[in-house]
Length: 96
Image 1 (tube, rainbow, N blue to C red):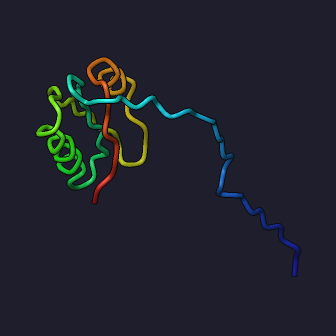
Image 2: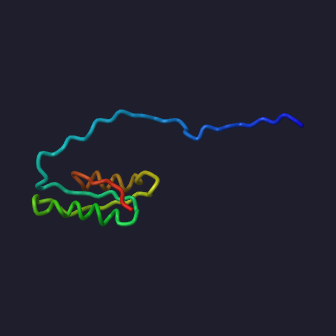
Image 3: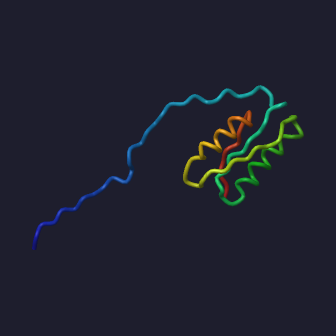
């Protein structure tokens, strides 16, 4: 019987932690332009757009801009640029 070598790879990879401060919160929503970044899971867009629409009776907010991203990845640069340019706040979440 011969000796054999077993190589074990660590599946965790290299964790990278970057400290990030939260964005300042507006004192009121009136006049702000909402956005939604949905992850293409079932009902994610519906849920988040409904959340934004539920703010309308209490605040005079603009039209909603919606962007999409892959389920397991970041939004494209183009999507992020659109949201930055056209929105004052963005709702981000997941649904299934």
